[in-house]
Length: 511
Image (cartoon, rainbow, N blue to C red; front, top):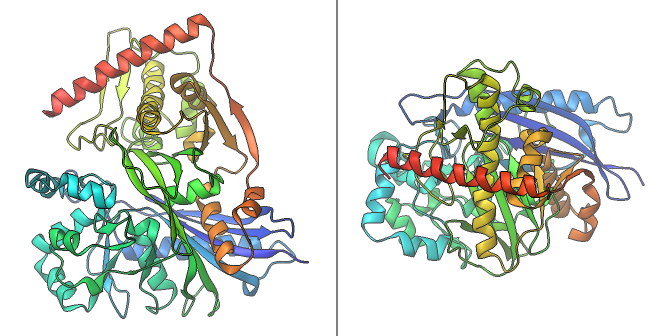
């Protein structure tokens, strides 16, 4: 029996990655072609972040062309042998486009954008927080796409008019890419993406009329159809880089795709992705459990109409902290240089960096917080600051871990990690120490693309069960907590310094 081939589109915040996987008869997945193409970010006003959808789509096309070209070096592969396509995407980023042509009506409003902060404050003052949490598992924060839609309906009358008439439609980025791949033939999403909109009742498994009314949308027909995460989403049509007729069988939001790519299919299994931000998810199984500690409850995936839930904690800046040191401050030539430069330096408790460059996410949820270094003296070195920045990422993730352990039935003992920054050995050892957890890093850090491919394979019948899908993951390195008395005492003082610094940025923000 020959291999099956799956094309996975991983559309991220700063670039688009396309991976071609070969799936062996033993159900092992191998990368045979891969490419990432970056695209610009747009910052028209302070706190605003936008993507040009044409630029975004072009990055997908270019990455796909390059990945397919590289896959062609495999003698068994041809583009006509691609069995199915999976899509994973940056969540919460809202796109508005023409129903027939897919032409964007405006730039996409990115998940990091803070323009809808005042709308969320208005909703909270109106006493809507508990209702929203009970139905969606989310908090009223500008992070989520429903608040962005409310901003459009209030501030872009030209776009609002077309939405209310129904000749324009909306969706997260997965919906836009699906629309483009099918030449407008499919306007759909999956339950994991729908659960990030502030309009989807995760218990009922449908968009909620009361939440739609809260946002201000009068025509619910502009919302995408919500399907299973492994399903029949449509077939390719009119794409320059793919033949017509290839089935699209899997869609997952990026963090849920990483949970799948890490094969965290059982309740109690957890992962953290260190990408632009850091995102920790814990599989809850089929029981919807709301957090009492500032975390989100969201849909991990839906199979055959049955939803699996997860707890999620998000810190908005992780790998982006190193990009900030590289691009804004000029301290690094490459983000990966941070490991060697920080290895022999001392950060906390002397120097602490709070990387709240886009506000504080879970469990604090303070969009007004800003990043800051604390403890600077005339003797502070650049290497100390770089180490403090790495530690700040790990401190934030530990806050997520602490909150998650308070909500969970049992504490997390093993944390599976992925994302670009997970390649940093120093950061991973910091995480193991700060969180008193075993950190398990796989060979393949591209787990979002893997997760989308696994679910596409499930939808196409290449995989018959979660048990078969587990063969796709192979461990690379395990990081264990340093347990000497000196290491334990140092961790305690470092965590105390972090708590003081985090409180300080919130005082500065007025929160």
